[in-house]
Image 1 (cartoon, helix red, strand yellow):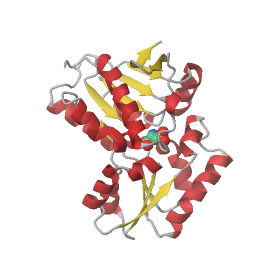
Image 2 (tube, rainbow, N blue to C red; image 1 turned 180 degrees about the vertical axis):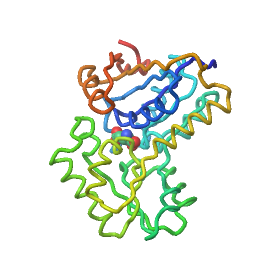
Image 3 (cartoon, rainbow, N blue to C red; image 1 turned 45 degrees about the horizontal axis):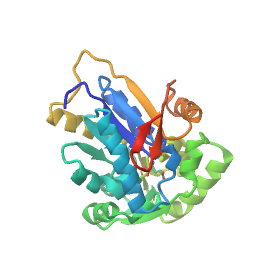
Image 4 (cartoon, helix red, strand yellow; image 1 turned 135 degrees about the horizontal axis):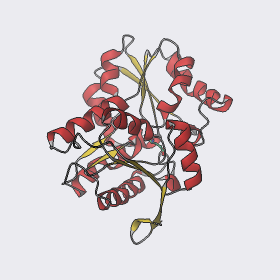
Length: 273
Ligand code: DGL
């Protein structure tokens, strides 16, 4: 492993860009390779087995591309696959997403916290273990948000449909007395402004800054931080349509990209086109 290799980052789609932008801001010397598995989005309603097999194939691809660390910038894939990936690729350092129940339980005054996530995230043993370790008697209102990932993928961040959808998801959280909300899906920070205006007085936790700090810590511990002369280069890959990807990346993070396309092969997993 050498310091000039890129950081690999993956998600089912563009949600992980909420993590990518923090990594790019906190670690401006690092090259990144961002992989959006848009042909399979959404992961949330899929079985844990299927998500695990997608995650393994994407990881193999990112390792073949020379990544020095992989960020599973998807709560759903972390819930389904993080443990499996660490066992399968023992030499590769991974940073995954874990619902931010710990800071929420420390922050709440009412003792009630809303958690917004996909169905698969709530099913995984990772969520059960986070609750067991950190909820500390705090009541959690677990809210699935069907359709919200698709709205973000379509760039519908503040449209009447998205706002109405969010209002519906936030109703049980508001009426249950929560004073803190955990965004446990990496797509949701892109609608944080709409969430804040529909949930006034409720704190909203976006875990991305903490994840970027964790990436820095792991790279530093392993002597893998990029050298101080270089300016990070960023490459973007999708298994879906390149034109739509280019457009949504511009809408979400204000960046003009030249995406690279990949396809899924039954025999070989992810391959370049
Ligand atoms: N961004 C993913 C997450 O953090 C979820 C998206 C999906 O359902 O595909 O959970």
